[in-house]
Amino acid sequence: MARPIAETPTLRGLEALRFMERMENIKKISTKKRQEIEDSYQLFKQRATFAL
Image (cartoon, rainbow, N blue to C red):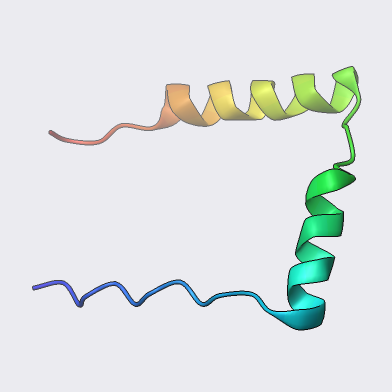
């Protein structure tokens, strides 16, 4: 049987400020890097075989 999921901690003080700053200043990735990620994903998806 699975263990219960713990509650997500609330961010306060400097942690909360850092989080908000990071959410406002998201770094965009290049089209080339995005395509590399997509190609890798498709390769893994193609090779993955799971019995259902």
